[in-house]
Image (cartoon, rainbow, N blue to C red; front, side, top):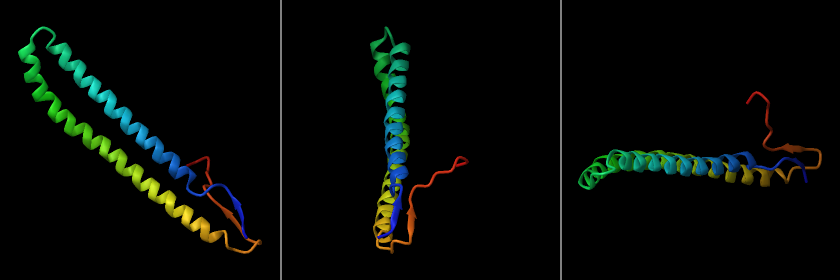
Length: 110
């Protein structure tokens, strides 16, 4: 069995988790901003609030959903890459003892 250094797929798993967190945070803060803007603009006019809600919230929701969906799609790609790295690491473990497998090697420049 080969000597294993590092954990296969660790950096991709961490990146996927960070992408999901980033997507959720972006969605939350942007939606809060939209609701704050609508509340600020229509503080005393209830009919205007409904009109502004229809004009602002629907396009904002479509934009935010696309931003959030993009982060989730990238996170899924990272997760599938991590899964592939783990599969390959499982195959490389079968190498003889004279081999050393290095996983998730990080460089200072990258």
